Image (cartoon, rainbow, N blue to C red):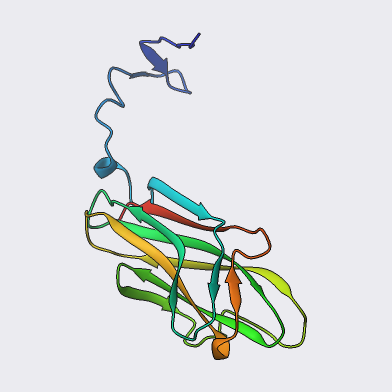
Length: 170
């Protein structure tokens, strides 16, 4: 059974007045939230293994879509990429909004590079604040490329990658 608190007024701390509560929250919308408020959160994760053996940046399956409520909103993108790789292998990462690049390591070993350490499993993070200036559905995704075309595995070793999108009022 749900509980309810019913009051008509709240007295101020100093006892000199009251605060009327009639319908105070009924008109609350995302447009009326103050700048910096979190308006919505979208998250996605994947444990599907994607093997990459090319220096060409390739989709990893780490993707999520958000529909901003205002063109002034910012989107905070937080992604964690799980990678399994062996000796002398590395990975480069790109973050895209649609086909627009927002972040890149600039090469195929800027995200991580292993030199004679044997098989290893790492989780790296990317955080980016974007201003998409749209109220249309917007897709963010991660691409990866393997250093020198060596084999890497996104989500290898039974791991999982995540992406989280947070709409922030502008």
